[in-house]
Every structure is written in C-alpha cells, then in structure tokens.
Length: 130
Image (cartoon, rainbow, N blue to C red):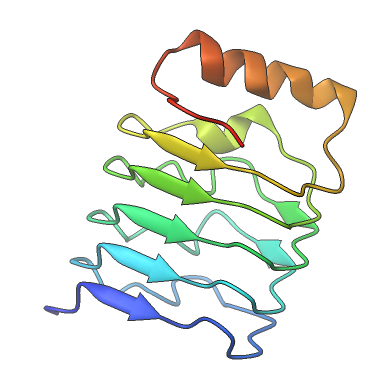
C-alpha cells in the first residue's frame, strides 16, 4: 500500500478494532482527531511501522493499554490533547525517535503521572510537553 496520509478526523468513530490499520505499513501520518474513541488497545497501531505523526486530540479516551505504541519506532509526534485517559509510563515504550508529545487540556493528569513527565524529560528525547 502506498498510502502515506490518512485523515479520519471528525468521523464520529467510537471503536477501532484490533489490526484496523494492518495493511497500511507505509502510513506516515494518521489523524484520528475529534472522534469518540474511548479505548486504545496494543494491537491497534502494531503494524504502523512507518508512522511519524499520530494525532489523537479531542477524543474521550478512557484507557490506553500499556505498550499500545511499542511498534511505532519511527514516531516523531504524538498528540494527546484534550483527552480523558490516565496516562501510564508504559505507553512510551518503543517510542525511540519521539520529538514531540502534546498533552494540553488533560482532565485526568494525576499526581502519579509525575513519573511519566519525569521519565519523558529525563531521557532528553522529549523536546516539549504541553
């Protein structure tokens, strides 16, 4: 597949199944902004080996399964603005090239998430956290 950019923003999506994107191995930009996604499992993005930018902004995400982004080794930008999930450090595993993580307007950023920020800043791979 030669598809490089997929924009599914504002499509009223509320559920994406395991391996939804399995045939999009060359995809570089995935925009899932402003949908109704509540749960992200670890198989959802597992075959997006070429992904550089993932935008999950403005979704009512309740849970991101640990290691959900572990196969996104080339990911440079992760946008999680205006979501509702509790972030766990394990979602960072595998993000070796990440340069930008955006988490503005987070409603459930709890004190235990300080470990997440400390880890992100401590590795110096994360240029900016909003």
